[in-house]
Length: 105
Image (cartoon, rainbow, N blue to C red; front, side, top):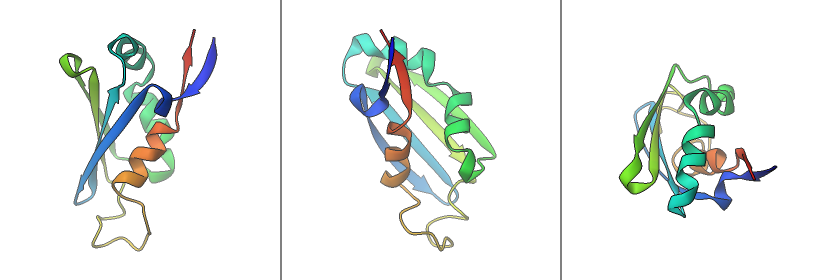
């Protein structure tokens, strides 16, 4: 077993609205989807984004697409228009998720 970053197994899509972001994680190969479901849990994502202090993290599975969608609340410093941070939204946060590692055989 060894660790690999998620970007080797999946790609991400994201959107933000107000102080909420959703990040979709889509497996490149259908055979990797089960591994992602097992290891990329709500708890791990909440821990990975702990520095953003999410108030809630939800995961929605989309097995026919070999994908999952995470919705994180209160991670955008009030939203794009209220935040003083640069690049703390959208694609920047999906890339942060894709840097998380998983164990593969």
